[in-house]
Image (tube, rainbow over all chains, first blue to last red; front, top):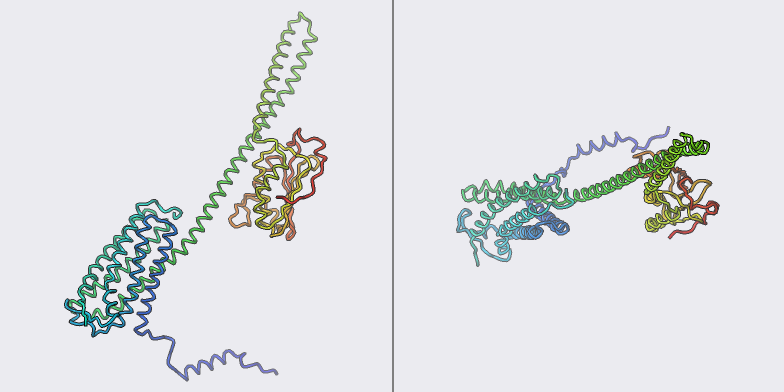
Amino acid sequence: MKKRAPWLYPGLIASVALVLVVALPRTALALQPHGPPEGLYVHQMAHILFVGAMMFLLYYLRKERLPGLRWFTWSGILFILWNLNALVGHTAEVYVEPQDFLGAPAHLSRRLLISGPAAWTYYITKLDHLILVFAFILLYFGLQALARGPSPLGQK
Amino acid sequence: MITLPLWPIWMVDIIGSLGVLLVGWACFREVRRLKNQEPDNALYLYFYWLTLSLLAFGVSRSGGHLLQHLLVFSGHQAIWQRLQPVTGGFNTITFVVISAVGLFFYHIQQIYRRMLDNHQQLAATTRDVLELNREMETLVMERTMSEMALGIADGIRNPLHIIGGFSHRLLRKAAPDDPARAWAEAIAQEARRLECMVERFEALARRKESFFTQEDLNIVVRETLEMLLPEAESKGLHLLVSYHAAPIYCRINKHLVKVALAHLVRNAIEATPPQGEIRCRISLERDLAEMTIEDTGRGIPPELVEKVFVPFYTTKFGGTGLGMVFVRQIMEEHRGVINLESQVGQGTKVTIRLPLRFIESKLGPEASEAESSSPARFG
């Protein structure tokens, strides 16, 4: 009688594999740890996505020649600048040491020791609302212009 | 070493956060108003979701920053240390949502554009079909009225001839002093008057046939093929045509016959692969003018040949299934017949026969005996 090859016994192979897994346990690698830098990397990547979304907005608006194009364009540019500012700021933040902050945390006299370009960059990029608020204001003006203009053709 | 105060950063942060919340909310209200005005406007919908996600970002970020200042200045920095990653995570999510909205809109926009194109194409087709249908109705009405008028005239003329003939015979036979002579004379006069009226009526009815005009089929076919030559050439097809040696004058509606021929030739162009041939032939077969359009295309399976003239049956994407129905109706309105033969892989041949009774006096016996020319490349 002809003997069957061992690979023809899937039940046997599965049983052997199960025994090996159970009998010889190792460090479980299925769940990877998410250390502190990962959050920063994800956040930075999200900023890049935000830039991509704004670039699409700019491309689309210029193509469609919608009412309020000027406002939307500048709003989009400011949103992009804000994201780039935030990207640089988050990176600079890594290089600013906790001991560079002088004074009590909840005190108006608290100061930042400008020990190098990173501290300068951190300080300047922290004033990001000077860009962000104007980006929102220009978006508002754009939406108002869109509402005042004729209904965009081919959209209905 | 230089030290800089942090309070300007805090001030800008607090005022800026409040500003973002305020303006973000104003943007959302504006775009919500737009969306409510036109809920089906895809652009407004895009701006609605973009602004909503920007507002969510504004709330998450500015709310987080304000909370940070509140907690730190109230001495609860430890709580803020625990909350910071959560608000940061929310910020990240809102960035992803903002980009997802743009990406989603881009694809929706493409689908929407295609739908809009299809809609416009459908509307144009419907308009064409309605226009064609109106022309068909006018044609049927005019032809029916003309036929009825001529039929009535024919029906009146025969009894009139008899009345007129007999009244003249009575006149000849009646004695000069016979009182019936005056009556017969009156009958003959009135019969003549009626005959004149019938003649005028017939002339009028013939003029009403304006929807049908005397046209040379050779010219009609040539003009149609001239119109379609670029389509055939762009596909690399050979368009061969053989005209009848003499003009074949038919009383037809030129526009409708051209519509029917164009449809048939277009079908042939669509069905024929590049370097294939489409042959058009015009000839006289006994008492019929015959036009054939033959292609070397993929052909139609036998089970589908029967369905070609069934209304709304179509195998073409976006087709109405009315084209061939209209072609047949146009031919029927000209008292003609259309026949379709096809073999899969070999091609399709459509034959149209228009009866000679529409072929009028201009077609002499020498013309009917004339041979069709050999096929020549068109264009």
